[in-house]
Image 1 (tube, rainbow, N blue to C red):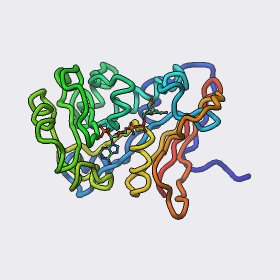
Image 2: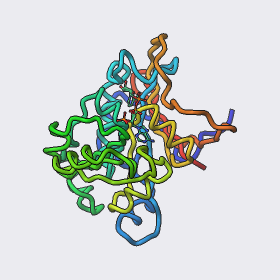
Image 3: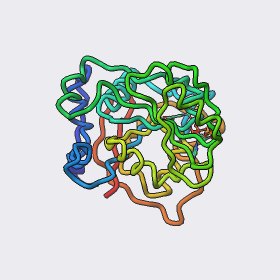
Image 4: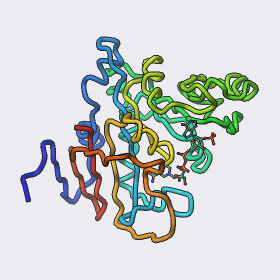
Length: 262
Ligand SMILES: NC(=O)c1ccc[n+]([C@@H]2O[C@H](COP(=O)([O-])OP(=O)(O)OC[C@H]3O[C@@H](n4cnc5c(N)ncnc54)[C@H](OP(=O)(O)O)[C@@H]3O)[C@@H](O)[C@H]2O)c1
C-alpha cells in the first residue's frame, strides 16, 4: 500500500458533482491550450474516454450505453465540453448514430475564454468513407465535421463528403489513416485539445502508435460475459506500456479513472 498519487481525489459525498468541479478535475494540460493559441509548438494532447464492464467488455449488444450511468454521461459531456475535437472511428459513428456536438450554455464562457468555438468538431476516421453524408453530422454541425482518411481514398466519396460540408483531411498514404499522424493533422487545423471516444479498433491503434496521452476509463460495476472486445482492440505491444494513475472518482459503484503517459 502507498499514499495516493498526486492529484488523487475521491468524491463520495452524496451529491452530484458540479460541471465546474468536473471541468477543473479534467482540465487539459496548459500546454495543449498554448498549442491551440499558437504560442507553443506542440501537437496537442490526445485523451481517450471509454467505458468498460468489470469483465472488460467495451460494449453490450453493440452499444456502450448499457454500460454507462448518469455520472458517466455527465463526465462524457464535460470531456466534450473541454475538447477542440472529438475523434471517433467510423464504426462507432455508424453504430452509435453520431450527431453533431451541441453547444452547451454551461461551457460557453469557459470555451470562449480558452479561444474555442461553441462546440467541439467531430472528427471521423474512415478508410472506406462508407458513411451517410446526408446525416446531420455532416450537413448541420455547428463547426464542420472533419473526415480523416488516407490519400488514396475513393475520390467520389471524398467529393461527396466535401459537398455535404465535411472538411476532408488526408493523414495516411494508402486508403487508411496513420494513427501517429492524426494529432499533427488536427493541430494543423488549430485543434489540439483532442478527445477520442474510440471505438476499440481505433483506440488500440492510437495506443500502439504511442499517440495516446491520457485514458479516462469508466469502470462499470457490471458483468456482461460474452465476447465483446475490450476497450483497445488492435495488434498488441511487444512490451506493456506503463501509464500513471492521475485521479479516481467514484459514484454509485462506478470508478472514473484517469491515467496519463508518465
Ligand atoms: N466502451 C466504450 O466506451 C465505447 C466507445 C466507442 C465505441 N464503443 C463500441 O465499439 C463498437 C465499435 O468499435 P470498433 O472497434 O468496432 O470500431 P471503431 O474503432 O469505432 O471504428 C472502426 C472503423 O474506423 C475506421 N478506422 C479505424 N482505424 C482506421 C485507420 N487507421 N484508417 C482509416 N480508418 C480507420 C474504419 O472505418 P471504415 O470501415 O469506414 O473504413 C474502421 O472500420 C460499437 O459497438 C460501439 O458501441 C464502445
